Length: 191
Figure 1 (cartoon, one colour):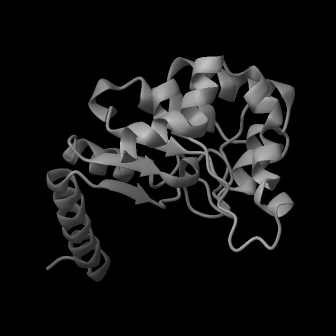
Figure 2 (cartoon, one colour):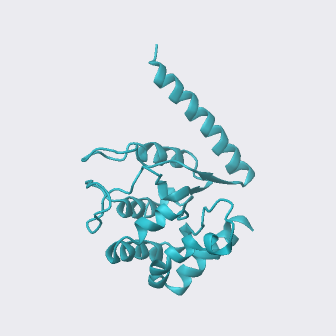
Figure 3 (cartoon, helix red, strand yellow):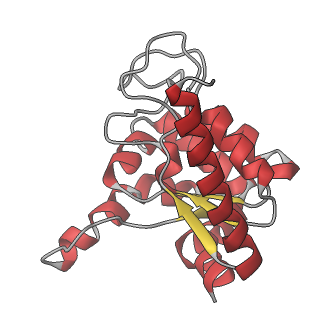
């Protein structure tokens, strides 16, 4: 028989496939929180969940999907860009991964949510990182959604914290990309 982990993985995949299939048939949008990698991944490692996520998306081309937080997590940092010293060095870079996915016509059903202060922190870490992120968003303005991911803020300033963190990024976007990121893509996907 199969190892226990394989049986559990197979059941998980079948369950997830059924959800994605239903969402595609019903016209629902799927928002998935799935880290691209494991916490504290070692140097030289390829993001361990990237291929599984691609495979899932390829199996469901008619399901509109939003990948929350661009696949990042509290302890899943972006893979190293050349200009960033905030994370451990890695041979692949997060911006490159996202750019490659967006350039694949078979993954046209995927959108990225850039909400959360952790994501904003990485995106505006250096002028070079911000420029590279802006370049990708400007090339694919229909595929990104802004959000705050603030839970129960007690005042407006706390709610706007993430928005304010993104000021350097917003300044580098074209007017069209900025409008789509902030509200146009939500209107298109949910209205």
